[in-house]
Image (cartoon, rainbow, N blue to C red; front, top):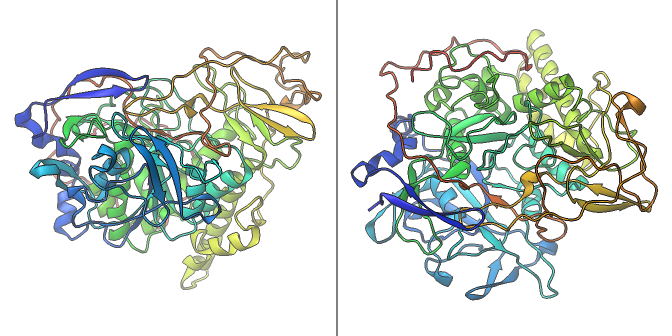
Amino acid sequence: MIGAVVAVVMAGTVCTPVVMADDADSSASYWYVDDMGVRDAWKQDITGEGVKVAVIDSQVVSDYPGFADANISYKAVLENGLASCTAQTDQGVATLKASDSSLKAGERGIYATHGTEMVARIVGNGAGYDGSPGIIGVAPGAEITAYADGVDSGLGGSAMDKKCKDDDGEVVAYPYLTFSEVIRHDYRIINMSFGSTIDGGPDDVAAYVSALRKGIILVSGRDNDTDPGTNDFVGMPLNNSYFPGEITVNSINPDGSLSSTSDVMDGNVAILSPGTNMPVYPWGDSKDAEVGDGGTSSATAILSGYLALVLQKWPKATGNQVLQSLIRNTKGNESGEPRLDPEHKRGFGEVDVAKLLSVDPTQYPDINPLLAWAYETSEKHEETRGMYTDHSDWKHDYGATDPFSPDGERINATKNTDLVGREYERQQAAWKKVEQCKSDGGSDCMKYSATNTADKADGKDSGKSVLPDTGGSKLLGVPLWVWLATGGVGIAVVIGGIVLAVVLSKRGRRRSRHGGHAAGRGPLPPVNPYPPQVPGANNGMVPPPAAGQYAPQQQVPYPTAFPQQYGQGQPVPQYRVPSQTPQASTQRAPYSAAPVAMPPQQAAQPTVIPDNTQNPHTNNNR
């Protein structure tokens, strides 16, 4: 039976009892299926069948009863093509195999993991252990490949935090090695219910851009905390949760309000998805699901499942066109145009599965609207202008914007984040060719689209450091960057004898449902003789320091921590589970019984430009 109280271990290893729904109301925990139009889709045989979804997470228990009829394969990507690696756990030495990364129920005392829950949110059949209720997935027909990027810790922590090493003791499994491999395959969706800071290497940034180029839908979630995010929708190119063009998800309650664990302004949030009042397994050795807060991790996986339904319904739509539909057709928005919450808490609104299955997305441009919005918005703010534009004149590989959040957080970038701007230009130029073809009466005009010319683009740059010339105008914007360590200790990068302090976002700290690494403060760099940055002086640049010197230190209000390194410069992922006591469940307000009014089916829509910030919550039938 799904229990009434769940004990959740929060980040910082604090155990807090959480009051949840009554036993008699346990069926309400499947509201993300029952109240979101999912069963109506199933009645039409829309189950996500044929849609390939990659889930990068911790190890998955393959014989979890909820997977009895699911199409799941289990893999791991290990450095140098290794067949296996090992990790020391509290239960002894564990082996991770590249060909089968899964766990068996009870192995090392583990029955539930973070990865198991995320996969179950997509394809679970609702069965739990010993005949008890389990997790229902929203797209049971989807084809899942579960990539484990390390050994699961189990027992007291369902988030993976054991480093898997080769015979020489070198860590050989980590998220971005996995990501670089996953994008080589024909997945339509990549689900990443974890958060960590990209190490900033050229290959990592280029890998994300390559995924966007191919039209792969990237889904991740914001942190389960109430630390404010950025001031506007500009992306964060060195954070896997906020990479421009990716869907950043926040979690909502059954009544549509934000989860108390992440109820905060965050300019980069794109979509709201169910994440609370649902079955969870609170411990690695748990066999009984309890009603609790699944966090932004679950909201992310559930959204990935919803999108699998959409991709099956509309097989001719590109990933970019589905994203266009996603942000234009949210609950309460009947305009057919995207409306960004001006308070920057709810993004473009709450996902509306019924609309997404009713509105043909092929009418929209094959341009990633989240990429477009991040680029265009970043150019409107002096603090972020130049973040994605031509960096060929940069003399160093790393930089940071001026403070761009309520707590003074800066956005970090690398020299090759101008790949983001180039990809945006490429998509625009490609769509112009499609429109010209249609105007000329041509046939099969989509062959010129950005997604359908992605292989050609990859052939020119091999997914590395440059993108093909789009023939468009030169990207605009003057970089306003400083090379400095903003309020903490970053990675020391040696370039030509100059040591640069590269700051990793404070959002790169690891969090998990069952405890994370304690955040500590490292020593501050010595005071540098260079004066503070003066806006407009030297085009916003501080002269690079001499060898052995640090760039000027500017303190931010909150302390930052040494990032937990995850082998080869890779941070440990922090899984998206609640870090604060969630509020008691609320009764879901009924939706209107009448069908949702659909916007008229229109001809191809213009490219999204982030000028419309009308309130998206008017007449939302709450």
